[in-house]
Image 1 (cartoon, helix red, strand yellow):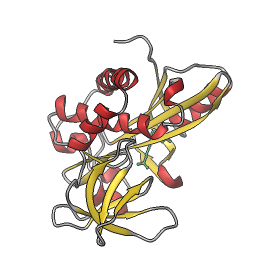
Image 2 (spheres, rainbow, N blue to C red):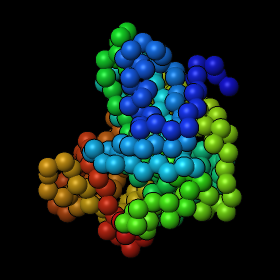
Image 3 (cartoon, rainbow, N blue to C red):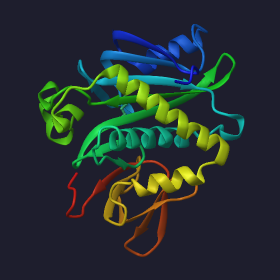
Length: 254
Ligand code: BTN
């Protein structure tokens, strides 16, 4: 595999993303470092939510320096990670995963994985950390009761346990390929692939943007930057920069 990625495994930490950020800021490591913990005690999710990472799950954070012409495009790196995870689950684990824009992976109508990306100024320039949490070998009962009916684990679906190191190796190979494609060809080709795997495309959804009223409309896909395009009840096209997406159609109540 490409030697750009230097993977470190640790049994436990509070949050792989927080730990990796400390290492990067103190100069202890550089871009390309990947930190994987078997368990997290204070995993962080989007919108300051808690992220549960019981033993047996994947908690991975990787670090990258954005290429100069992609600076400020953290959401596109984030979408790349979503696409890499979706592709891996579909091609290597034969499961029909879908991307719930922007950064969740869904299987059988439930959440399998979430991604949290952060950008900040490192000692040598801008850095991105992409943090991935995926329910690998746990079962629903390893999670708090109120979350159980909304999540799914890979081992529950396949009926077998999966090797963590194999998963990480295959994910990085897949992410690496998409990263090269993105840097060489730009976002357009990535956008087309993302749209093909987008959950609820063509269906009626509701979007909750931070501190805004909910918007309801048809999910039309993504624009050329990767933002969500919604056609609202008044036939106006809305561009959603960030938010929580829910489906109100018959195929997936969430
Ligand atoms: C979300 O769906 O809200 C995103 C969850 C991201 C969780 C991962 S687990 C590895 C990394 N470390 C963290 O503390 N969070 C991310």
